[in-house]
Image (cartoon, rainbow, N blue to C red; front, top):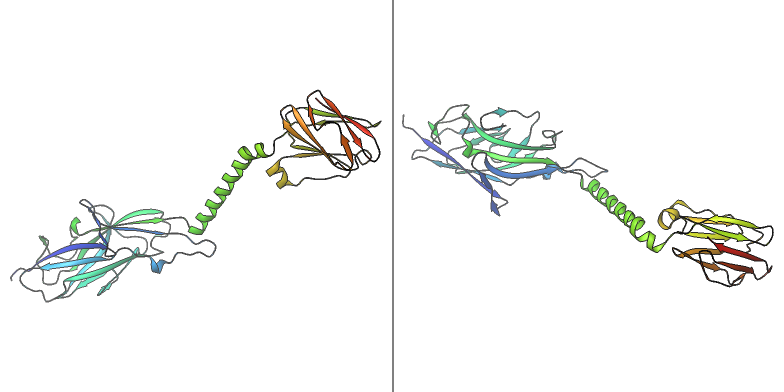
Length: 309
């Protein structure tokens, strides 16, 4: 019987735009496929998962073959070791391609193949590199394929292998939420560490002494607060105000204070006194350490001495 020689060549195109990379030891690199787990109603569309289309080309000898050739797509872990994934790893589609069996009929010159990863085939896999090889299931009339004796079970050499990568990535919604939280946390840290001390400085001095009218007296610890309010009614600062602006100390006395008097730091050694001008008169707007001033109530004419120490 005369020998019929078949030479199988792989030509891979990336969506018709560029050629695949060639790795002499591992075959043609098709590309990388990524998926992500479901999160809050955002699901990965496995039916839209596509790797670049591949073209299987045949160059035959002088004589035509009459019986179809059947090739099986198999997975290899390394150069010579075939293995079976736990589930159906890839869906391979094309004309006369069923269950990873590629049937080549007489007169066919090319065979276009499409690859898609399956959800259950890569379940639990975070990242992997797969090599796809062609195994002869039925050599038809061929005596040789690429210089090798054509027989059932023949694994074609590395020139006829595809390499594909798979990686599970983070769900884009979850990724967006995490980045948003990172930005919020970064902004919060910048505010608390950099901006807040400038915008809302705190007292560096130790205490404020208040005396008169008799028998009123008070010693107010200042350090660490951004503001002291002398008031007639109890007030409470909420958590967000403390977090973003700093603590305020409220000193309540309904007999002495008929309106609020606000005291703030001006610098490390000076405070600023801000009374209600309709209710109080203060002979000094600034007060330095070891100095004192008097706040006079315009209605009751009661005078309170204020000393900073």
